[in-house]
Image (tube, rainbow, N blue to C red; front, side, top):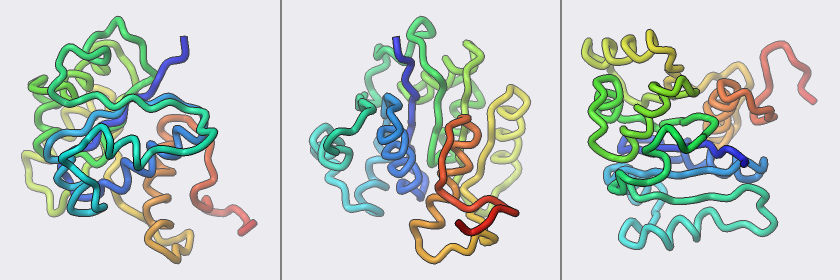
Length: 201
């Protein structure tokens, strides 16, 4: 059976990163289980204009594409009994992008208060890839301690920090750089940004 990736979108600014990642994965033929927290829906509404009141329809609208090889399954964050809540359901791993400090704290401390946190806990206990993309500034000591705790458990901490050496011209270029770095951690090939030292074409 084809193993999906899990993508979690939380209430930190930067919802466009999560949406772009999902679209790339689907276009590349990867299956995706999408979990969005209630605060994540608030950010999707405020930053991208999504309808947060009709969530299933909104997901279908924004991820619909003809001949898209990958399949997307949206799972409500309250559904604590969903497939991804069990380690017996096999996945390739999980990316939380963007990751709020509240969600990061919940993952670091094993809270499992909702499906997103429980799924991240499953990734830890099963030894699967878990990539967390924090989007907050400035950071205080509790934020840093939680990141350090996760890093020591093998979680990849990938702050949403766009670079400039590739000569970005648009906002999409900045988004693609961060998403490209996530895909590097997922070990998925892409050409979303020009790598350092590589020719322009």
